[in-house]
Amino acid sequence: MNIIEAPVATPEAKIAIVIARFNNFINDSLLQGAVDALKRIGQVKDENITVVWVPGAYELPLAARRLTNKKKYDAVIALGTVIRGGTAHFEFVAGEASSGIASVAMNSDIPVSFGVLTTENIEQAIERAGTKAGNKGAEAALTALEMINVLKAINA
Image 1 (cartoon, rainbow, N blue to C red):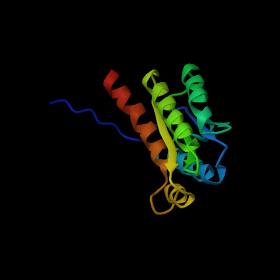
Image 2: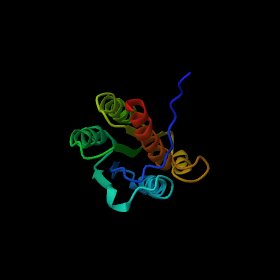
Image 3: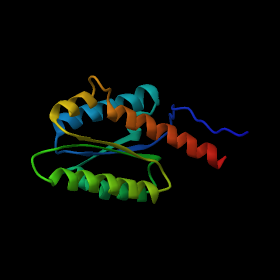
Image 4: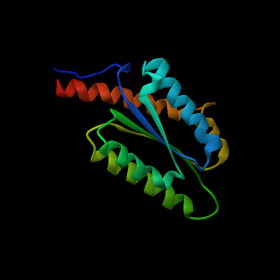
């Protein structure tokens, strides 16, 4: 039986993080978690991390696609927060951001990690950005790093 598993440490990786400015009071924490995980656990050098700010979660897929097409990065991490409000806007933005990022990931040769919170309220967003439920930005970063190594192992 052949089993492919991979470590998380990826010291030479070049990582792009595309992050939404809307809800930045939450997204800043996701970014801090992602960068901390990349540097501390993944051993990625500071100069190998690029952060790209976009207006909101809806714009994440386009920027992620452009970054994957540049062939300059080993992985792209998409970060953002969509909080349910009193209208159907949540479903449209969350759904399009999710399906758009998934489409980019499926059509890319590099990992595209999903770190977009879709929550019912601000409290849930805060919990997932570094308190009770951990930091989903850090989780997305660790996923990206592991997938870089998994894909390398598959190709070996």
